[in-house]
Every structure is written in C-alpha cells, then in structure tokens.
Image (tube, rainbow, N blue to C red; front, side):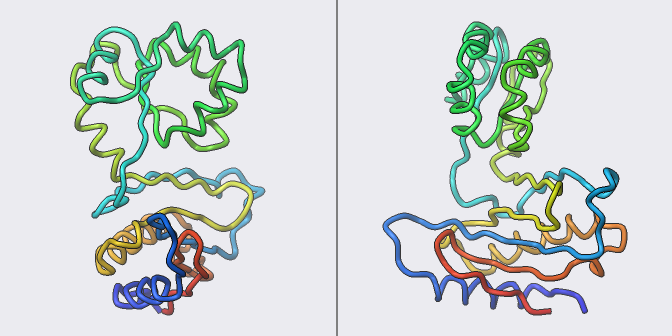
Amino acid sequence: MAYDRQKFVEAVKEAKARAKPRNFTQTVEMAVNLKDIDLKKPENRFKLEVLLPHGRGKEVNIAVIADGAVAEAAKKLGLDVISGEELEKLKESPREARKVARKYDFFIAAAPLMPKIGRYLGRFLGPRNKMPQVVPPTMTNLEPIVNKLKKTVRLQLKNNPVLHAPIGIENMEDEKIAENAEALLNAVINKLERGEHQVRSVYVKTTMGPAVKVER
C-alpha cells in the first residue's frame, strides 16, 4: 500500500507536537528503513541527490575551491572561497582539513584543482558524501548551481539499510515538509530494484524529538 501525502502531514504534525521546545530551531528529519537488500553487493549501494520542492528551510554552507574566474564569481555571491594556495596548506594539517569538511554542507570546485582536492581533502569529504560539484575554470555565474544546492539533500546507502536526510525545519508549514518528504521517498523508491516493496518503514522526527512512524 502506497504512502500518501496526508499520512506524511499527520506524521509531521505529531513529530512537532511531541517535540519539546528548544532554544534553537530544530530540523525535521526523515529516516527510510529498507529491507531485502544485500549491501555486500556494490550494485545495491548508491548515492543520491534529491531536490526538495520547498528547500531545507534554512541556509546551507557552501564553499568554493577555486582561483581566477570561479573564485571571483563565488565572492560576488558572498560565498567562502578556498584558494589553490590555501588548499596546499591543508596537506600539512589533517586537523584543519577535517574542520573544513565538517564546516560546509556542499563544495563547488574548479576542475583544475580536483586532483589536489582528492589528495588533501578526499579522505575527509568522501565518507561524508561531500565531494565537490565540479565546474569549468572559466565559469563566471555560479548562481544557478548555488540555488540548486540550497534545495538539495544528499543520501548515501552504504553499510546499513537506512537512509537519513533533513526535510525542513520545525517552523515550516506541515504541508511543505510533507511534500519534501514525499519527493525524497519517491527518489529513493526509484533507485530500488523492487521499489516500494523494499521499504520497511519511514519515520520523521525533529532534531531532539522522538521518531514518529509514517503510516501507510
């Protein structure tokens, strides 16, 4: 039996109602538990980018690793820029490289710097599913890419049959969060060999609140 949007709305309402007030705006998260999937087989693992119809509800941190035209385009948008020279310094400090990987949600990189990014940052970005979106070194308008990333969530199915992702924040409208949840679940279902039959359960929760099952 398929999930319908009203079930998502009801689960989101309940998750919000059961969440205790906090002194920060909590994220609303979704977990999709899978079944009958052998993750020892590489073909069953996947990475997925999903565009949420109503975005994440909050700003995302984007860093641009570039020199020249791409760096200038990034500065015009007020984005943090990591130059080729600064990238070189990271090879001497794994601790700083780890901090950079943690600080940003997404990275955009000029193509010529990708070999160095792989060497100096790859081991920190890879496991976090944060490898950069690569752009040509002559690109002068990053706005379309940035706007898309602001609405994007990344998922990675690797060792455990469960996927987690943010789908909004607690002060967003329930219906908008539900639409985001539906878009996310449909994207996951489309990646599964037997579609919805491999979905064991779906839960939503706030950052610090209890998980609420989305009923079918």
